[in-house]
Image (cartoon, rainbow, N blue to C red; front, side, top):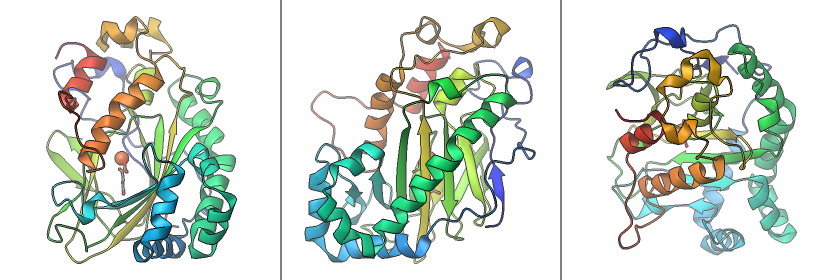
Length: 320
Ligand SMILES: O=C(O)CCC(=O)C(=O)O
Ligand SMILES: [Fe+2]
């Protein structure tokens, strides 16, 4: 593995941060000194490719897998029919979802890559999450560990296969910020991941790096010191790209409020946040609706409205 790119996680100083009119300060400093993973962690991309190929070739198995977790499904392939949504397939697993999949189905999937995938994410979670949380927290003077006791993690595999409903589309994954504390993105060496350095300016990320980026929960808990990085994935027609992402979020009952409210950084947040009205459970649900819509995995119900990026910013930051 070629090294870990720690992508914009820290604002230089919350006091020099720009005012609310531009959501996040454009200047960021990479945390080069933060050793988060040993160089030996590699995602099992051969197994990941095998698993996607197996599920596409065996619709009955894919149906059985999705029936294990009917609320949202596990293997999401809306992009095979929907050319407007993100043009990718995903497999979304969490410890809870895994427990819903019968031992029999797990055993039958195991030789098709599933076994290696679960081993990889389980070991990554068990061996690295706590130390990353403690280093990330220490870098901005907060203790994140007590807020992450229940292992609210998700494992996601992405297949940016060229054979979707819109093979020429460059939209692999639309611009977004992750909702949780941090995400670690493993890539298979094919480029496509981009970070927004300042509004509208996208910078490609090295295809050989493992990327750590923070999400909204880290932004709020750190009083704005840990930046929620906006990112997206662009496709190259005809080129397949695979990625594996571990999402780490606080426990569902954690109230999303700056941990060090007295240091003045809190001034940028809305009264909703400062009054303690937003917890992780609610925020995850609210963000989840938007992803499923972008990813083509959910239709809107009558009268339902999808909150835009700006609305999330307003909710967290107050009036813009
Ligand atoms: O595939 C990638 O490199 C990133 C995917 C991503 O950002 C996500 O699923 O939230
Ligand atoms: Fe993301």
